[in-house]
Length: 423
Ligand SMILES: *Cc1c(COP(=O)(O)O)cnc(C)c1O
Image (cartoon, rainbow, N blue to C red; front, side, top):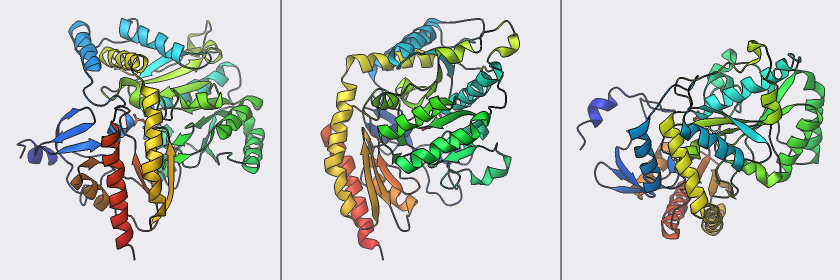
């Protein structure tokens, strides 16, 4: 076995993990296409794209070449008073790809920080317009927007992982998604009642990811956009998970014809290679920060902002979206998930099966042994990592039908075994 594993594990603190009881993590030594290779030589077919990032599969030669070339020229330089080509190109390309006049790009290094920046933009936008009472943020049940303090306050208070910190978080306003007429009227009333205190509404368009892979339709999103416009509240679209094709369009907002005031991007931005995030504002949002007063400027600037290697990787990822049929691949994955995953709905212990784009989610009911399910998937040669009540697949878009069948077959098999063992 690997000589680094045991000595290193004695010093690592793993995410979302009860270190006393959780099974040891699997040592990975390389990745290629849709496969991870473990230290003992076993291969796992990856069903979750490394937390939804590796949309082109692993080690894509085009992204690797771009990173290598950038490494030789300029790996990183501070981004205050200096600017470089990969960031400038990437900003212009994102502005061209995004709907409407979402055209001003602020780079950071993680999704949570991209959301933090969006919140600062929204609150300061209103302050700069002389409406400093507008500071509250409205979020939705089942939402997930990150692990930092401001973003934890926008996660589902019950299903979220952050109940522990409730007393230390800012107090925000939770709403139900307006999925029907009554809920639409209730949402409208909520904004109407509190509009003077609300800076923005934040939503994960079409699919709420880490809060349980909950899905809503484009009409719901359109209803949110309408209500925001009527009540002078900014709309922040958190497309950190949905952005870059995952739901079937380049950006989920497009399906509803909604142009949010601010959009947050990360996860698949670099094709799963390097950490990078972007908060992109519409023109009117940016213009509210233009003044002779230096105090009206956006006061944020992460040390590694707009890292040149990460920007080069993101540019290469966008090249691949332009040169390869990614959205058609997503449509094919959606169709295959619909045929091969839907039968899970008949199994005992299954509450619901939901599919959207390259996302397939099976919601379970009854007692759920997450560690046991995870171990069983690895035994079957697939990397599938259920959380909460959901077993889900979000494979790289380049996955071949046979490999996708391995994943859906493993899900059906594991859930059939679980159904047989249920009391
Ligand atoms: C992952 C995620 C985040 C947080 O991103 P990090 O890079 O983990 O900080 C925020 N919002 C959504 C919708 C996400 O899926």
